[in-house]
Length: 161
Image (cartoon, rainbow, N blue to C red; front, side, top):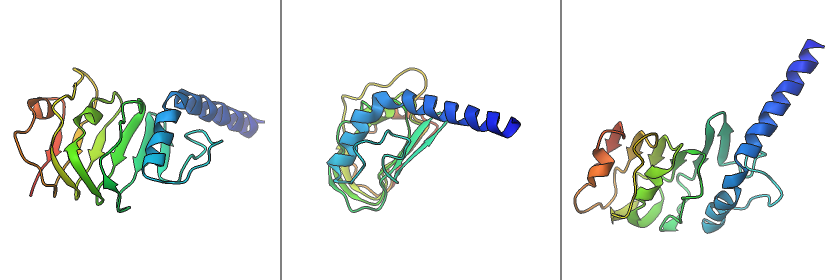
C-alpha cells in the first residue's frame, strides 16, 4: 500500500510539473521547427517532446549542441521555464541573442564554437534571477561587451578568440 501511494504521488507531481510548462509548449515547438527537428505534435514538453529536451523540478534543458545548425537563433522569449540552453558547436551566425539571458529561469547559456559576430543591444536584463553562466568562446565577436552582461548577476562569462 505504501509503495502504491508513493507511485500515485510521483505521478501526480510529474503531471502537475508538466502542466506548469504547457505555456512554453508553443515556443519550444517553434524552436524545434526552426532547426527542423522532428517532434511528436501530441506530446507535452516532458513526455518527452524530443530527446534533446530534459525536464526537472525547476525547469527544462534544451541541448542542441553539435548539430551543424546554420543561421541565427529564433526568438526564445516564450521559453519562460528554460533552465539551460546549449547551442554550442554549430554554425550559428549573427548577433548574440542577449535577450535570452533575460529569461527568468535560465541558469546556463552556451553558444560557444559558433560564428556569432556582435551584440544585440536591445536586450533587457531583469534585476533578479536569470542566467548565471554564459559561454561565448570561439566566436567572431566584435565591439564592446554590454555592461548588463557583466554587471553583477552573471557569475561567469567565458569569452575568447
